[in-house]
Image (cartoon, rainbow, N blue to C red; front, side, top):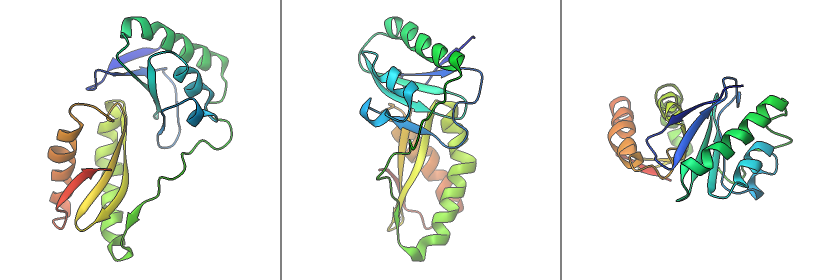
Length: 184
């Protein structure tokens, strides 16, 4: 089995591509072994010293590190990912969706929120996934859209510019009532 790696705009995150589907729908992020009890691969990756976050996307696994050196971490991460996919073990066992990630918005704004979600799903998420990350709608209040960046995009030096210059401009183009975009 050959696993490709790609750099991301976030120097602390690498994207690992096993050449097969990783997660059929959406994205899941784990930041501790305790949060990954239903995701054995994430739990094993998070047990590697220096690994701080793991995200599963449609065809990739993003791994974020602390100040450890990729030269030391990368072989261990590749070994764990290769072993998991070679064994054909399930990615998830039981319920692995994080709890407590509810949305907030005034029901009167339902139509605007539906359009925001559609734009994120069709125009933003594919580009963000290309960089090893994900973006999730969290809320809408007083003309401000609240989004959560995940994976390589969480903590990336260019994520603020992505939110303000890219996503905010896109949403304002289609929905002039949007005044801004903030990180949730």
